[in-house]
Amino acid sequence: GENVEQHPSTLSVQEGDSAVIKCTYSDSASNYFPWYKQELGKRPQLIIDIRSNVGEKKDQRIAVTLNKTAKHFSLHITETQPEDSAVYFCAAENTGGFKTIFGAGTRLFVKA
Amino acid sequence: NAGVTQTPKFQVLKTGQSMTLQCAQDMNHEYMSWYRQDPGMGLRLIHYSVGAGITDQGEVPNGYNVSRSTTEDFPLRLLSAAPSQTSVYFCASSWNAGAGGELFFGEGSRLTVL
View 1 (cartoon, one colour):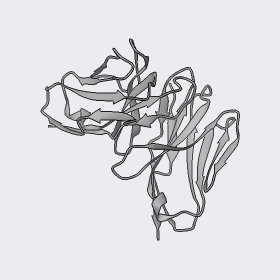
View 2 (cartoon, each protein chain N blue to C red; view 1 turned 135 degrees about the vertical axis):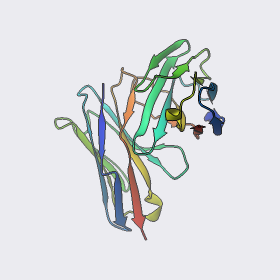
View 3 (cartoon, rainbow over the protein chains, first blue to last red; view 1 turned 180 degrees about the vertical axis):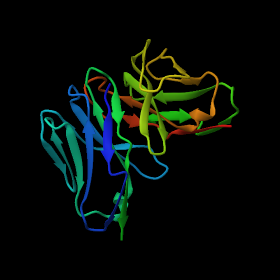
View 4 (cartoon, helix red, strand yellow; view 1 turned 180 degrees about the horizontal axis):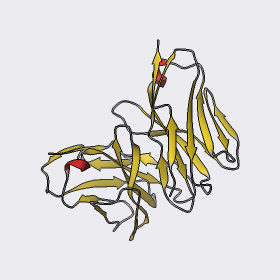
């Protein structure tokens, strides 16, 4: 089955700096890659996603890149703000397989 | 729309007791799933359902049962609770089952097994 690895587990940045979170997946049939943000004590919520026919997607300060050959994808947050502090999860889904498999999460701290 | 509603929010059980976590959604989503969240381990899929009457196992199904008699409801049953089942449980639903779509999560249920 699918296995998703996520690094780093903890990331601390200064406000205004960029943050990068990296994930690798094992199942070459996976073709949908969402990212979820979970604030303390809250439910995970989708912030951006990418499909395997696209190499990069951007939404304001966040962007995701996908390298299908290497089976890895990354989340980039620019101009970080204190409200970006949260746990971020990457995930992979083999559409048709009905399973969304998550990475272990990255706790991001943005210091003001 | 209430979205995805989970009850109870908190529960304490003794080892060997059974209980049911309730999950209901009012978005007419065909796909529903249960995850457990443990520190350092992310969200792990327990069971999922692609429609009424259809369920299947996820990554960590042992010790849990599910059923899907209606589109709206997807209860998770712990048959004989063990301390290893202490966790936060999230129910999620999606309109785009199997085609890559956003998961909408409930608020979570924190379970402690003594």
